[in-house]
Image 1: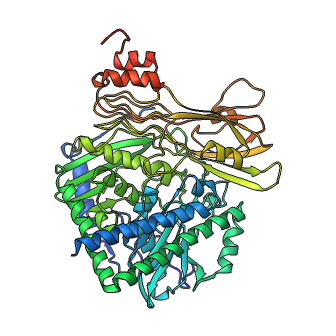
Image 2 (image 1 turned 180 degrees about the vertical axis):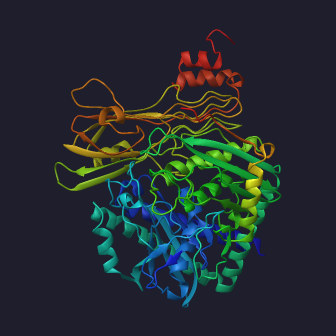
Length: 70
Length: 567
């Protein structure tokens, strides 16, 4: 979350590219970047990489669900 | 750890939270507070972690820690004084949706900050495009009402008059809003004064130490519950039928639940990109829905505080329907998408813990909002009307009949109050036969409410769901009945949906339709999905359902293979 210099409004809403938590600048919160995306932690970077690998592997992806046809 | 003191203190704090809610209920002006109880009261420590909460509205329970923590990042504790009350509703700063207003007050003992008294409530009118907040066709947050960053509505015990004026100039019902905000302040005042008494009784050191032990205890209890669930990656997806703008598009909610050891990661990646219309959930909703689902599937005796949330990690990628980016619209995310997320997580866990999950519930609050100028007084009135739905069947019981959806725990407004406060006459209110999904344990039934307009004009909007995708059954159970909203215009004979009557894109999400005197509105709430094979249902339960009118004879024959002659 990047606030204006006068602190009266938000110039940019910043979220972790994996878990989506709000990242407040200058509040001692960890900020990392990977492939141009902002993350809150190395854990989130690792998770996102692992998720993408898993999604490319059909056997590891077992999502059930109802039929989405109208 | 002193378990006796911890237990007594925990019960005492929960009682304070319940009492805060009673004050809110008794002093509020709007029916959404006084009748529906769409609020939650809690106590947080000075970091914003939840110490105790009363069992009012689950969506607000899980959202409370994030809300308070986000506010404290903007207003540090060093800037908070005794007697201050902080107000906030911003959905992009930890909030749930625009109508949900959070108020919290510091608890000082001998000038030392010990925590916060917190109340979150659904303010029914927030300005924006429609009376009542639920604009089913909004395309940006600015259509949905006034957005309030963390500000002090009271400073050192005195009203911050400028903030009050700004707030009340931007809503249609300033008198009612004023009363409801005062009720929220009364609740946090009570929470503060009662907690100060408790801290003085035990002493600050014992209080702090015991709260730390309490949160650790809840964490241990939750970890033990999770440890007992078989390890694995479990996935499920469900759908939202429309966003009110791109009405024919289907939106996916997907949850992958990674349960390993004594912790759990709930990953929503795979869910649809955020919608143009107002069905997007905020980060607060995505977090709260995950907590809500886990709390429903674990031991209900675990004290509800931030400790029991520690083993749960939520991944809600930004720019998706579960974590909307500014300035996307979001008002329906907290009411419609939240229960869909909970159902998706339960669907994922259905094989791993079949005895602790349920089939899909109605998953909507109906969310009919309306307003207008009273023909007799000229005063502007607004109502947020909630309807119950059928809940899903479970491994040991039928689903609840006609109860508010899983994240609300609210009460539909009694007809007597509804008719007294608003210019409608309710002509019909009854459970819907055959609306429950068949199963060894059937779903709960939905119901129909039909009412006639008595005012010259009422402007209605709605944000509901389940007009297309019925609640699903589990383990062989059948799906529940669909919901519907229909209108019969005065001096006509044909019931029409909102698409037919007003050319709206969606039947379930629409804004600002004009209802006039003599028009009738019919609201049908969905029934819950069934659990287990219908053929396994006990015959005496089928007979009872037929007698009660929950199931017709034809329905029993069709769904259960029932015949009156068979033993």
